[in-house]
Length: 116
Length: 107
Image (cartoon, rainbow over all chains, first blue to last red):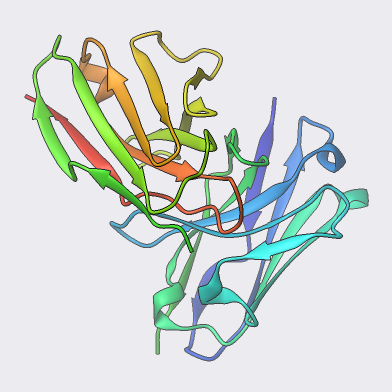
């Protein structure tokens, strides 16, 4: 069974940093592109970033470029999102999601709240 | 960047009705279009990819069509369990933008 379990969310002040992690199991992690997608409370879905199978290609939505960094460790079956210079508008549930193009497995998400 | 616009933003329909949701891209995206269903408190579920290919396990009452800039998701006979928000998403190139969502309410 495919499982994606996020961790690392919490309350952080504006300008602060957080590192999200996603532990993957039930599939060959190194065979898949991985993504972070977020959803602000009561709002729609917002694709944040993705990374290719070996970590050599990374793409970001403009609103997080220069502030967020996606990475992966295939030896640990783990995906990460380093978030710096956080803003109130980054407040959302962050989902770890498998796939290139169509996103077929989603974690349950971790809530990031940016507030003073 | 390419923008994805869904219409309507919400709709209310009865069980058995045929429901159509539209997604329009601001530039052509060939058939690089996905549809998801999200029920309240749940994670999104993949319904259709490549504009018209039904994901395994998705009921056949769901179908997708379109290419280029205009796409549709059709529910041929609405069921009570179809009450949800539906999102389109393009993936021809980064960023993989989602539409704003269409909320389907069951009368």
